[in-house]
Amino acid sequence: MSGPASGLKLGAGLDPGKLAAAFARFGRLHLPGVLPLAQARAESTALATATPWHKSMHIGGKGYDFALETRYRAGDFLAAHDDGVEGKNRLYAYVLNFTPAWRTDRGGLLAFHDADGHVAEAYVPTFNALNIFRVPQLHAVTQVASYAAGERLSVTGWIRER
Image (cartoon, rainbow, N blue to C red; front, side, top):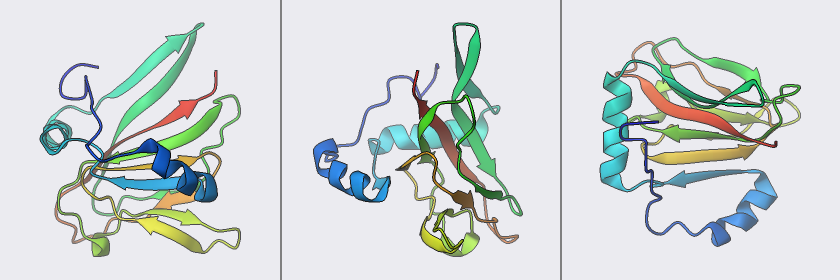
């Protein structure tokens, strides 16, 4: 990958050891301020102005996507699913958010469902926040409101077992 995304660095103050217990209990984390601010701003600008892209790799003749740009506009949503796709060997999914000043009432929330189909927890696509969660886990992206100003921008992907 070239451009701002190459050479990503984590934001100061993120201690993976302290986050392990929460991830073990809930199977998901929301990490605000995951990148240094200047780097997050550069990524946001690149996503908002660049041609859509995705990053994939090929191992043993098989192709694997590991980073996809997602751009949700008014009316867009992603129906409930669990990312558990036969043969994809997905262990974890991630969403790295780059939308500045997004508000809850605009929709576009990453919503996790419980066994009864109720929303157990939902995250606003907060600028410079990483959401990571175990696969399979039922989730959706709620519909972006018709009056939403701007687009919901993020980079998504999966960490896979070989």
